[in-house]
Image (cartoon, rainbow, N blue to C red; front, side, top):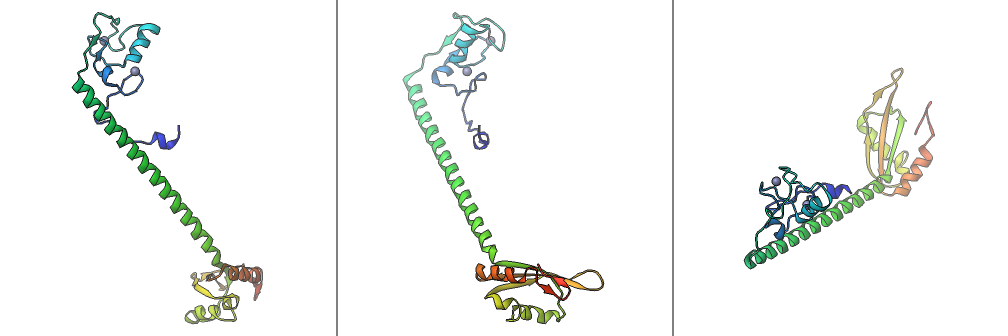
Length: 203
Ligand SMILES: [Zn+2]
Ligand SMILES: [Zn+2]
C-alpha cells in the first residue's frame, strides 16, 4: 500500500463498517441482525462464520441460529434514501480524490520550480583564500572592478563573508560572486581556481 493510501482521513459520518472485514455495511447488512446479542457483522462474514468457521457469534459465542437471525425488510423509502446518500458519498469521494490529484500536481510543480532555482545558482562563484589588504568599504567596489571579478562578465551581486582570523594575523575571506551569465561564472571559476594570490591558493 502506498503512503498516500494509508494517510487518509476516514470519512465516517454515519459510515458503519463490519468489525470483522472492515467493509462498509450496505443497506441490507444494516437490516440484518445475525445474533440476539446485537453484534453486527456483514452478511459475507456471517456466511463465512456459519459455513467455514465455528458458526459462533464472535461477541457472545452463541451459535448462530437461523431462527434468531433477523431480516428487517427494507422499505422503498429507505432504499431511495440510501441510494441518494450513496450517490452523495461517491461524489464526495471523487471530489476528495480530485483535490488530492491537484495537490500532487502543485507539489510537483513547485519542485520543478525549485530545480530551476538551483540551475540559477550556477551563476554563483565562491572564492576562498582571498586576503584583502584594502579597506572594507573599498573592497566590494574593487572586487567588482575590471581587475578582479568584473573582467569575467557582468556581476549581479558580490557578497563577502566576514574575515576570519587564521594563522599569523592573516585574514582570509570568502567571496560569493553572482554573475548574470552562468558562462561567465564558469570562465571565472576556470581562471581563478588554483591561481596563486600571494602565497595562498584561491579555490
Ligand atoms: Zn464483514
Ligand atoms: Zn451474539
